[in-house]
Image 1 (spheres, rainbow, N blue to C red):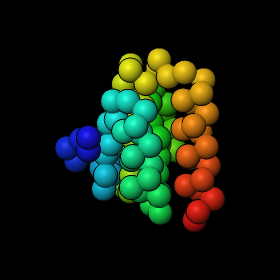
Image 2: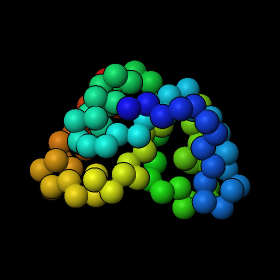
Image 3: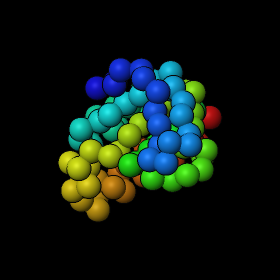
Image 4: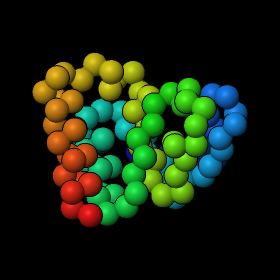
Length: 92
């Protein structure tokens, strides 16, 4: 599930960085697993990297949700993911 650690470059090529961990989950359980394993780290969730700002930049953990399979999540699954995210931030 972790991708090779290469530089991530946004669409406009004005932001480039290399995170310590780069996850490319293919389904909901893999997203949840990535969140659980990195619960105490700084996590940035990215999509298709069309933003021009440096907000996406992270040297710690990146979880990419650009996989089309994740677009098909049900509302219930999305709520579950949001709850997991909230809990991971609250645990800090």
